[in-house]
Image 1 (cartoon, rainbow, N blue to C red):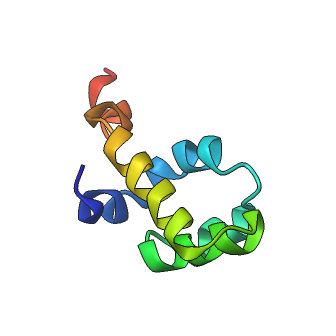
Image 2: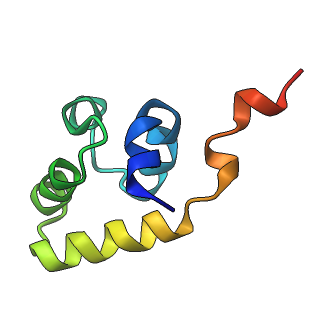
Image 3: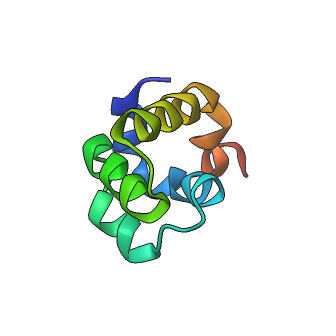
Length: 77
């Protein structure tokens, strides 16, 4: 998945991010606002992991993204 697409649809994918990183607060997600570097920093802060580990987690999460993350409202009639 392309990070630009995640960033552009941040409000839609925040729920998936909350499932992945439950220690992050709503305020954290508001600050992140789709910016990958901010997400990395928040993961490091809340989980006490190194930058490389945070980046690895984000990369794995990004790879798991599917079109269904973005098309909830588009498929409903």
